Length: 163
Image (tube, rainbow, N blue to C red; front, side):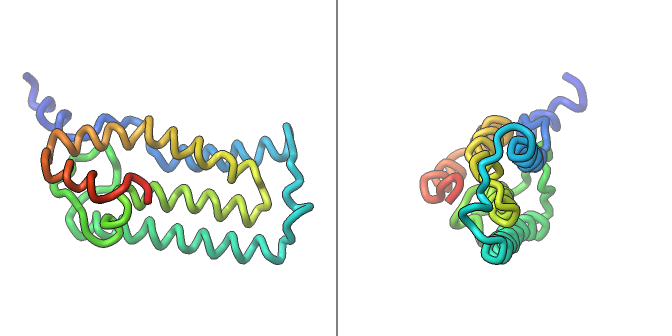
């Protein structure tokens, strides 16, 4: 056994930053709309409506994500999913979503898609969420269940993964 082994086991097996999935989806949506298959969303919705609505959704998404991040910081935790979790957070926005930061990122993708009148960005939200689940959430949940046991299982029963 090496000195690093216990620390390496005290973390979720996440090796890729989940926010990059949402960034990648926004870039992919922009590229698809621009070069492969434009949907012409701007024919149905006016910019005068889409920009303020999209900005409002983005602001709400940022508030949600920052509320989750704030609870992490107040309990001395790092938001990176590959760092150890010293404490289970079940208060604040975590009473309504087990993943408010990831949910905030998905809503931010929605807001950018609305503001940019890009239906592809919006259509890729389920893909982003599925990839975040596969790359991060399932590993985080397995780690939290190993580390916290029944308290985490009870929390999972009370609070949904997304909303």
